[in-house]
Length: 478
Image (tube, rainbow, N blue to C red; front, side, top):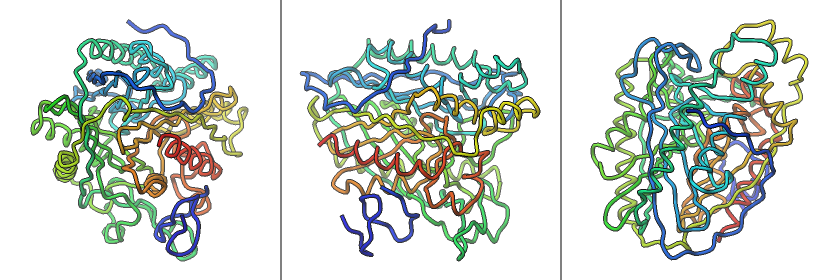
C-alpha cells in the first residue's frame, strides 16, 4: 500500500522517521540441504504444548564471548522454550541466554532438538538473547581454527556448547512426554518506558555524527532523542484450559546494562523474567530479543549498576501490561489456527572479505572480541558451502512470529509490522549469528560501528533478501 508521503518502501508504508528499506554429547552430522517454504499445516484433533528449561550457565574457568568466568553466576543463564504438537510435525522454539549461536553450532542445535522432538530441523527455531556476559558458539569457526592449528581462540571451544545442546534436547524430549492440552492463545503489547534508544545519531549530511553504546557516559549524547525504536514488548500467552502455560515475549534492544564482569548473567531481561515468573508461576516465561542491532539503553544508562534493576522493573512492567492485554484477547485455538513456514535465504558475503587475507589475519593476531576474522571466515565458509539461512514464521491465530538471523536493525521489525497491519506481528532476532550485524542498505552508506567489516559480514544487499523473505512468510499463511 502507498505511504502517507506517496512513496513505496519495500512494498510497505514508509515511516518518515525510518531508514529506507528495499523490497554425553550428541554425535550428529549437520544437515546441509536447502529448505523451501512449507505449506500450511494439516489440521489435527488435539493441540498440545510442551515446555522445557535447562541451565545454560558456563562453569568457572570457561571462556565466554569476552571474558573467562571468574566466579559462579548470581542468576543462571537458561535455555528454554516450547514445543507445539498436533499441527503437523512438532514446532519447537528455543531461547538461549547466550551472546550468539552461529553457523555450524546453530545447525547442530536445530538438528539435535529436531531429533529429540521427532520433527524436521526446519521446524525448529533457535534464538540467542545476546547478553554479553555469556558464551558464544560457532562450530564452523572451531573446525576451521583446529584445521589451522590455532588454539588461542578459546571462545570457540565447543565442548560446553555441545553438552548444553544435548541437555536441551533431552529436556525437549522429556517435556513432550509431559505435554498438556493447548486450548487458548492471546496477544498483547506493553509499553516499555525509558529503556531503549537508537544507538546511531545521523547528521544532516547523512553520515554518523554520534553513537550511544549500552552505557553512555557523555551527557550530551544521552540528551539526544530516543530515535527510531519499537517501544513495545510483544507478548504471546498460551493457555492449557484456564492455566497460563507459557508466556513468550520479545523486546527490541541490546539486553545489557553493564558487562565485562567475568560473571555470567542474563542482565536486566533475566531479572525481568524472574520477576514475571514470581508474579505468574504457572507459566514458563520465555524472553526473546527483537531486532535490536541498532538499539541499546545508552540514552538512559550512565553506567550505574543500579540501572540494571531499574531497567528490569521497567521491562517487567511492560511485560505485565502486555500480559494483561493478552488476557483480554484470549481466544480458543485449534490445530487449524497453527502453522509454520520457512524461507531459505542466502545473505551474500560483503566484497571486502576474502579467504586468504582472513586466514592470514587469524594467524597474525590474537583474539580481538566477538566479531573478528575467525567469525568472518566461518560465515564465508558457510556461504561458499551453499547452505542458506532459514527465516521462519509461526502462525498462531492472527499472530505471526518471525524468527530472524543476526543482529538485525530495528527497521526490519517495524517494516514487518507494516507489511501486515491486519495481523499481530512479533519478531525474534539473533537466530543464526553467522552474519553478525545486519543493517539496512542505507545504514551501510551512513557508516558507523555496526556496518564496519569487523562487525558485519554481509552488505547492503542483505536488506532486499530479508525483506523479500519476510514478505513471503507473512503472506504464505492466510
